[in-house]
Length: 489
Ligand code: NAD
Image (tube, rainbow, N blue to C red; front, top):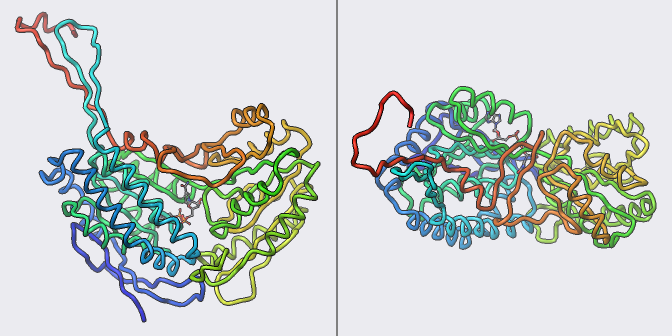
């Protein structure tokens, strides 16, 4: 039966200016009707967030009070995790095994930021003037526009909503037009937690009519964006209108480096998780295998075996390990990039063509580019289960290949040599280095990159501070008349 969702603005559930269909990626059939937010809806959402920001109910609430509400929200997410996971699976094609585990963990992000709310402290300065007290207040930055992509929306919004609300900001989330159902349902859960109306608003719609209006809005103070680098360029241009600060979490082409002394079975498993988990639709996908030529053939044989054994199926089946890609466009991009790479001399080891079945299914693919260093699959993000391979002979060569990218998000190093591991950690240009593991995250650890992977960090204490601005307060303690007014004191 067709389901209908609504936007959440100022504590009310509202239809949008129009409707659009949501497609089930496993069958390519319409399953739900989504509210399309356009200019008036966006304006209403920002107005609600602005009013809430200055309201006594929110601005007058203690930091501990905000923390308690965030804890309540976390508990509600835990209670509703399965329902949210089922919706995310239905609307995005992500497998239920992953969505159910991830959403349970999303609650931990809210718990972490609940605990941080009353630990965001100002400072007293040892100022160089005898009759003056100077201190810094940390105040919330204001109205935050959070724009998220379709994959892992509950997770990618939690790392924005959690620290922003802990700091005392208010938020308008723009859910992706692809798979917005879990985000709109999340609004229903948020509504039960007891926050004042307008503290969080959730809308969905398309980039130009909704995202652009939101991120250039005069009353938005900060834009927290996760998505692709092309869209990020629009976001930065939009923010020229309101001069909002930005944090950008973008894509990656992350190197996964395996030395000859590595534990092969462990490295193979990590590589499978790095590129085939989430059907490769992960910003931190370890999509470039950089492998010692001493073990390359043996490693690829084992990896191929594992890739071909991946259980591909319906995303809502607990046994499924890889589901469909979210959109038909991604299938096309993967096919085109692979064709261009083989034309450039790369060799497909397994997979390479869309699967002949209903839905956006693409098989685990390994493509050896050792003799095609210019192949486009080495530089372009696929957002699909495609692994590009390069062999190396020396440590210096491994590092050079790893850093030969405009991205700088994540990286993996597999070696038992401790000193070499340290040299690689120092040498790799990336915001995250995983050594002898891959794809591990926690609310306690900062997450983010540089270059085409963006700027700013999500997770950890700094993320909450990034939603604050500093106010310097000067208080003169002398009762003497102020001296010479023509000299700066
Ligand atoms: P996308 O960039 O196409 O869309 C992201 C969001 O931006 C959507 O909500 C979209 O509607 C909105 N948008 C589009 N045009 C806009 C405009 N002109 N102004 C304002 N908003 C606009 O990304 P996608 O295809 O949905 O997701 C995949 C991308 O996200 C990949 O590049 C992936 O690496 C990246 N990603 C990054 C991280 C990270 O944390 N670094 C995590 C997940 C995904």
